Image (cartoon, rainbow, N blue to C red; front, side):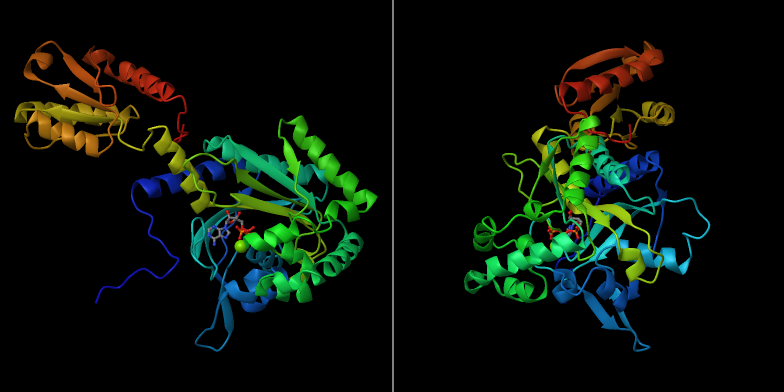
Length: 438
Ligand code: ATP
Ligand code: MG
């Protein structure tokens, strides 16, 4: 019997895994430039952690959690997100006690949500994110949004829109909930069963509904911005102004409420601008300010702000862009030799080139030229380096650009330098260089 992967899970193999590594590595580097330190927390946590943090009215708690009793009869849950576990870890390890505030952590790892699998939506997926706890205020919120934008730029995503909104303070939220309740009561018959539940539990959640017909109704709902207290509105405008000062344009989206109950104040999402041939996979990343979360899970009353990116969604967009631009992950060179004697010399040359920072492979048994070019193409090599008897005698090699088929004769002593500039030119010609660990 063939055993299939569990529905909603996926294997990440070869080039795709390279892409994930590149994204995670880049995100971690950018976050550390902003002063975030790594934290790794367990994948399983006690179920009440998520009930208290993510919240009873969220879709996650209502229907998406992988919850089960362990052999000792304790209810545990595979984490649907990482923020809650990080808050728990701060409390468990008293991290706030002897550190300068804010605490700043970055993380990456798998999450689990029992959702209907579709483009950009899996049951096991990976998130990268950061949390800053204990320095509430406009600059800290703006820092997290800026960092997120820098990550997107660093992985090669330029056409991104930053949507922003504020959930206000407790008072404005209550007034707004009341207004939503009144509005949606008139339309709820026509809306999905989730929205019916949301109307009872927390009408704010309705704004996050993804059902197209419901979205039409939601368009006319009262707007949070009209219910914000003057202080909350001024706060939002200040964050927007700080972002502008570092060149980040934002767009206020009055229906942006986020799917987790713990957000208060500023919330935001990053969206890839629609492009021909690239599916819309929803928000690439999202986050917001949370005033009470740490306290909810038994910690001190410290406010925080965080963001999380879905690595699968980033990988999908980057992969699509690379395909459109004809860029692929591949070797820098494939070194070809026709005789055993040359293969022996090539082994030393390949080693030298890898020392010089190039990636590459070579043939270990004699093959026809045609066969070797096929291998080089399959491996996605940018250049074939061809070494023949005549070339060896003249201390030269032939370097062939496998995309343009242009061939150049290069002196052995110049090979590293020439290869460097050829690779730079290779990317420049594609006019969108991938940011592969540069
Ligand atoms: P959505 O509105 O798309 O359901 P969400 O509000 O549930 O997203 P968050 O909980 O804020 O998302 O998670 C942050 C990021 O994690 C999302 O922006 C998205 O990129 C990613 N993400 C969330 N759920 C999934 C999933 N099931 N599969 C893949 N990525 C996901
Ligand atoms: Mg969701």
